[in-house]
Image (cartoon, rainbow, N blue to C red; front, side):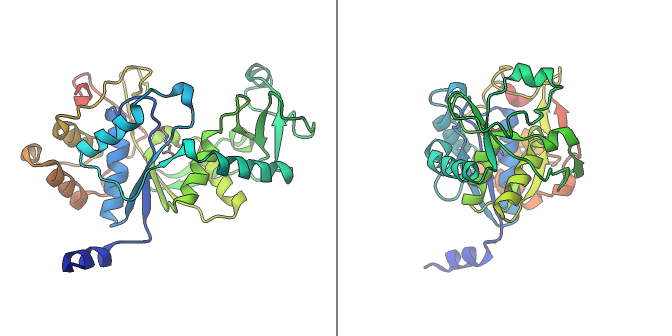
Length: 309
Ligand code: GLU
């Protein structure tokens, strides 16, 4: 073993495991680059491990080829991950086994309510099917929420409260079309991968209470959360495939990388853009500080933002 490798291993922080978990609904855009870069820099600055998990949980919303395209884009941007990639499409057995255990314990139940019925009942699911003992056919599966999580601490935003009706709602863990719910998959996978800290976009603040509730129910150690500001368009929408956010340029990564650092409150020197991608990321790792992040959940991008590639 080379001396350099020993140094590296000794300086690795085995207590920190972070991740980037894209959904392959389209190519990476500036908003997803911010989430990838923020989670990468936080993990690297902590000398921790950074994993990538492909959240291919919802085939109708996926774009053929997007998963590979995302991985090639991360490579072009120098965002090298540790270990293999976990694919949610290969985790169905684990999700189903957990759901069956909860059904057996009556911690979960089948529900026949439609969206329309819930809307009419005031917008939050009132637990109508809890004790009906319905069968599987055509029904969703909900988890009984007996102890709502009403607040959590975010490393950037501090104390975040969750409105009681939302926190107390029995939520869906498997949809009526048979697809597994995001909250279930993300927590079972984060546990399986030993994740210690979740760094992701602020659009996921809302489901965080449910996710913490799952850790508690499963008796697993909870993770820390850092929700990065979200890049939004001038009309307040999150950058997404639905609102035609352009793909970031794989052939010219440096300007978008520098712009993403600026978005995350860093002040890269002007000549950094002419350095290699590797050196840009080394600069970022050395200068990364959570305290420099804008303490906001959304930042509006001007038309001229480099997301146009
Ligand atoms: N797959 C989710 C998304 O792309 C992110 C999940 C997470 O980071 O917890 O929005």
